Every structure is written in C-alpha cells, then in structure tokens.
Image 1 (cartoon, rainbow, N blue to C red):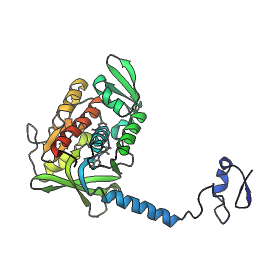
Image 2: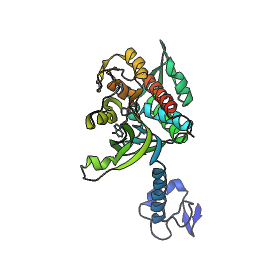
Image 3: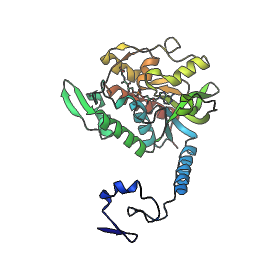
Image 4: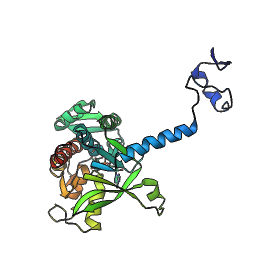
Length: 294
Ligand code: 48H
C-alpha cells in the first residue's frame, strides 16, 4: 500500500480506473511535482513552438515533404551545420515508407543503399540476389529519430502552397496549416525564407508544379516542363532517381519520386534504396551550392 496525501492508495498500475472520477481535491498525483498548472502547460507549449518556428523563418534549407528522401537530405545537411526545416502536410511524417509494399510492412533495398542504412542505424536482412529488406516501421522511425536528433526541425500539419521568388530565384516557401486547406477556410498563409528549397513531395512534385504553373517558369528538363512519371521499371527508375536529383530551377532542387516525376522517369515500387540515395545526393548538391554553413 502506498500513502499519498494522507490517503491510502494502491500502486500506480492499479490506479487507472480511479482516475476517471477522482480529479477533485486530494486526488492521486502519481508522484508527480505539485502545482501542475494547465495554463502553464499551454504557455510552455506555445513558447517552445514559437521559438522553434521563429528560428525557422530564415532557413538555409527548406525541405518540402518528410518522406524518406526528405528525411535523409535534411539529416545530412543538418549534420553539416546548415539550418534545416521540413514542412510536412500530414500529421505523421515518414511519407510512403510506413506501409511497405501493399501494406506488407517491409521495404526492399539494394546493396548500394547499405551505407545509408548503416548511417541511420537501420537493421536489415539479406534477402539474397543483392536484395535486402528492412521493417518499414523501424526504418521510418530511425530516419525520423536520426534526422530530428541531428537538429532538423520537422513541422508537421503544415502544407506548402506556394513559393516566394526574388530575382528569378526561389527564395522561400508559402505555408499554411493543413486543416485550413482541408476546411477550405479563407485564411492567408505565412512565409519563410530559404537559401535553398528541396522538393521532396513524392509522386506529385507539388512545389515544382507551382513553379511551372504559377509563373510559367522554364524548368531544367528536356521540355522545360514537368515530364511526368512513367510506368514501373524498378532497375531503371532506381538508377535514374539519383541522376534526376538536380536543381530544376534556380534555388529549387528535386529529389525522390518528385525527381522522377519531373524528369519523366519510371516508378520502382517498394524499393527504397533510390529514395535514400537521392536524399543523400540532394544534400551534397545543395551543400555544394550553398558553400560553408558558416
Ligand atoms: C507539405 C507535402 C506537400 C506539400 C506532399 O511520397 P514520399 O514518401 O516521398 P519520397 O520521394 O521521399 O519517397 C517516395 C516513396 O515513398 C514512394 O512513394 C515510392 C518509392 N514509390 C514508388 C512507386 O512505384 O509508387 O513523401 C512525400 C511527403 C509526404 O509525406 C506528403 O505528405 C508530403 O511529402 N507533401 N508536404 N506540403 N505541398 N506535398
């Protein structure tokens, strides 16, 4: 029997059923500090978020989309000292990795990606024929853990709806709460500046599409336009996704599935080596372009 505030109490694991109706004076405090104040909690959250957000209003690199390529690119950039934030539309970052192949929650990789798996501490198994598998939930979790630990700030529930342009160069992002868009509320967005923007929005290549459609820019593709994704051809798609990871307009790089959509390459199904290597390549290109993080 544990004695708390002068009343006999059971050990904590027996208390759950009591908590629903015992929240008046003298209720259990579970050994936590006195004076837990709801308004203080509100202020603490608001101030911490405000500080995190304010630090992300003048970025070195703004990454759009927290899929595998976005997490890998931002990790390598943050590790080099660049100020990086990812803006992710959904509640849960991780993009298309969680679901593996058709909800069988395993992903496949080829040996070229093993160095990246090891850098992120992702456990994998040898499946033979040069293929490796990893638990997709574990893989996505490790990408997120390592990226955020390296200093990447992930802003989930924020959608990028437009870009900011200066002297024909992408200079930042126009952002909005995802629920505002879903509810079709007429609310003006906010803007953050960035020395470089990376489009990691997957199949839709949303940022590049804005650049193409909204100010009729000529992109660095064969046609000057988004060439659209082609059907499944894993081997070719995996090779090309790294080659297609490029600056597609001054200040805007594409990576991951967005790179293949923009440059008219194939899809590859649940093989994720190319996504990881494309993210790494994007980080190298952007770091090379920005120079020292200072
Ligand atoms: C904020 C946005 C916006 C926006 C989208 O799709 P992803 O996982 O992207 P990649 O390229 O890193 O990985 C692709 C991979 O998951 C995949 O789909 C593969 C390998 N497919 C092969 C095949 O054959 O089908 O993640 C993109 C992320 C998502 O989380 C979106 O919610 C987010 O970007 N996003 N975030 N503002 N405008 N648009």
